[in-house]
Length: 131
Image (tube, rainbow, N blue to C red; front, side, top):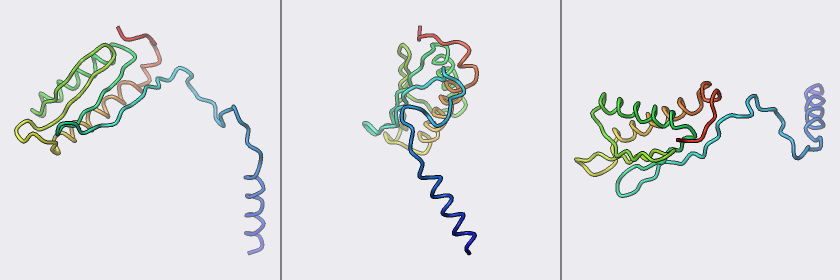
């Protein structure tokens, strides 16, 4: 029991060292990692809505093409608005005019697809503004 008390005291003493401000405790591996603001899904007019932002037009285009393939496979469609550097999705089951499990599955797919495209190792090869 005494050994445990000594270990605990040693741990507390090491934990009580002064903090260094202005420096990160770890060094990032990639300084040019793509950090993009990510919005959350919102419910508007009985629909799930989200805006995805892209730094590269090629990523935006791959995202839209993959969404269209998903729609062809599932026969469930979204309203897709494509803008310069952005894609807006609006999901609802048209027959019921409300959000269903199909819409939630589509939303999960779109989020995973976005992460796979934007945060892939290939992304660091070329940094450019959206065309």
